[in-house]
Length: 489
Image (cartoon, rainbow, N blue to C red; front, side):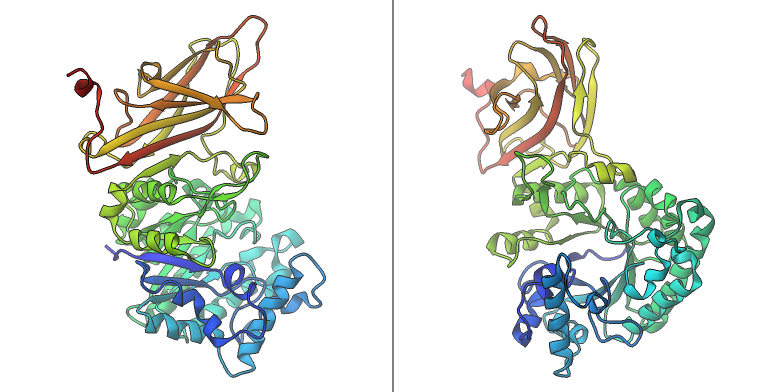
């Protein structure tokens, strides 16, 4: 089995070339690597392409060079990125080689990540412009030429990024994906052969989409790539929105990858919400939320963890968690906050849905609506350290007089102490938070089932209620909390 890795990705733009004023100083040019020194990160992945390339390529043009003059949205950021690159190149510095050398000086592996299908030189083949995508041999040849060029650098591996939606078109016209999947498989095999010939210790990985069906529908025969031995690792994710998913679909890819002695790296998005709700702006996930998702991934069998886009510049809290990512045992034993992901219409339309929200209609008493979720914590085995277990449910349009069934793994939650509070200060009349202190009814390690039904409402109140949020907070300490048995003594 491939070795454990702790990976941090930098896309070369948002917290690097976009933010520094040109000309880029050499001490700032190596910050993406230097900020990781002394953490648990052992692998630096660098995105080398977006609307061009972030190095002086002989195959393609520099990033954003085709956007001149800079008049549109993000024009300032594009101008900074291009100007900073040119400022280094004009001084005789290759920006890519500079980062490769710095990573090796700092003891990090360097993997170049190449977006597939995102470059101005292949715009003529974009599906949105009537092109054939990767079905066009010119496109595959161009991308392979980039692969060969990247392999002339002293990189430790290459990552093919097939998950950069919505920044890219898909790979084939929808009605051509199935028939052209073989073309893409052959191309990935060609890349794998080139990587293998370029050095025995180099690896090839791929960012893919979360569900197997999502990949197949777009011509990505990932299971076949793994069975043929083309990939050393796979990373399932959906690029946008960058919301943390503690229940990321992993089982299918772990099974397929491990059968072929390849690794799977669990991807930790940095956000807790996507900002689509007025009272819930886009915000970073807390360390406890990241730890909960990471522990879930490890418990389900990933070989390492992978993250990006943490608050910039990285502070003590971020550096501490990056250290913890490399220590699977520490992840399992720390405080956690599991937050179930809410549906985003864009990713749901692609096939990557979410368990929330759940609408519970009026007039269906005792008809249970179920939500499945996974947790890594074995609360029974850790009973001597568990301080609190709190389940929080945000129920829209709930009134106190409603009769609701709430079950956790078949046991009623109403036997536990419940505190009610307003759902949001902006619209306090829109619902309630129900906060349960779980003492006798607790979730189990692995898959859990939350079920609810609307059994009765006050007269003339016939609208539905909606479960908007589910959060599970687990707190540990050096001593056990006092439970019912102790209180009775």
